[in-house]
Length: 305
Image 1 (tube, helix red, strand yellow):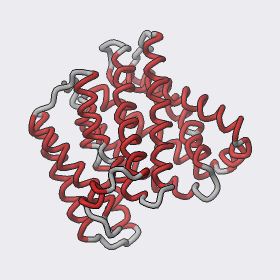
Image 2 (cartoon, helix red, strand yellow):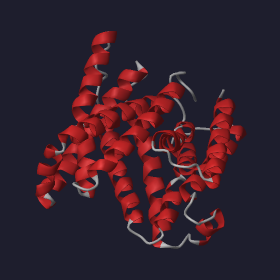
Image 3 (cartoon, one colour):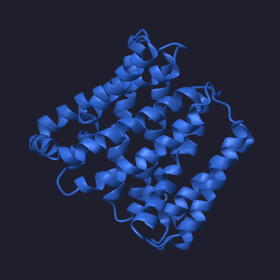
Image 4 (cartoon, one colour):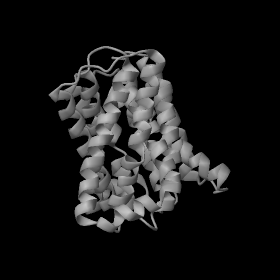
């Protein structure tokens, strides 16, 4: 059920912010560990999330929704699931067939649709289901573009460790979306943006505590690296928090699977950035995948209207 028309621009903006954040975060790979890179998002993102909350509350004279134990439980679950999904995806990168793992992680939209139907009762039209299927095939095609693999190679590699890691990562990301949506639902039916921003602050704060504590105990030197990388990291935090604010607003306004499907425009933004800004040639498989994603997104939007 779509509660507010803001879901579509919020989702498109989220995809754009996420693509930009990923591009900038590449610069940190040489100096930060996996956990250090994750910590950057939360440490530098929390002040941005708080600024967004106070700015919106002041501009609209809205008030803090009543917070419950259920809200913090879902926020904690969502934050933990996102950290777990990120780590599983990185584990897939460490395997020889990491491209296969990446492709399977793109099944997040389909898994999200199934679990949202089961856990949230979100019913989608046949056209939206068709759009989801087309866009997932398109994103998987894009992830394989130029790697010498075809979709049949991916299906044949289902039992490889990289494929299992990718499927599990997609599952945890899908469940993250559902947990975030449930957290916003516990805040009542007030201003949808304020509820989304309240959930954002709680999730990022809890992630900072969890990831920050782990790094302090197991990778203490990474805290110094995170603080020393502030010139780049502050932009990662800004884009991560702003993008998450858009994601959370969309989740609070529309079905999870629909948001995740349209949100796959992120790969389009990433591809176009590489083609026009970095002058990278567009391969035939990438053009096919790009076309399928666009068709799937358009079909999903039409099917939801």
